[in-house]
Length: 150
Image (cartoon, rainbow, N blue to C red; front, top):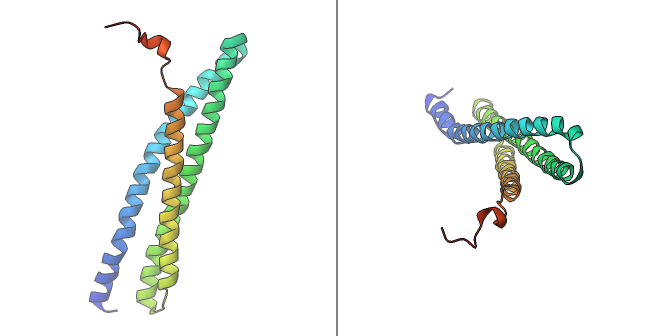
């Protein structure tokens, strides 16, 4: 094996590896959000049998929102894991291509494009989840007492 070829392959493989680091950071953020949401859902589930009327309806609405958020984050994490696998396959294929002398550029390109597409999809799911969380946290104008000069 030619030493410059190995160095060149390692350099070429660095970009996908940096992408793995970014994906890992995003997964960490999503996992933290998911843990907080699950904790909140457990609190609400314990209160569920103790409530009735409008309070119960509000609790059920919040549980439904939490269920949607859990679903979105779960799907985003799944897509990020699959994207990470695609990145890993991309790196392996780069080395196989150089070591075995096999032409795999179309496959390498396809796996990397798939990884980027999955990353974009996961980020869109993350955006949707944060938008839902933000919408649920809007403070009603009645609490802001906007008619008062403060």
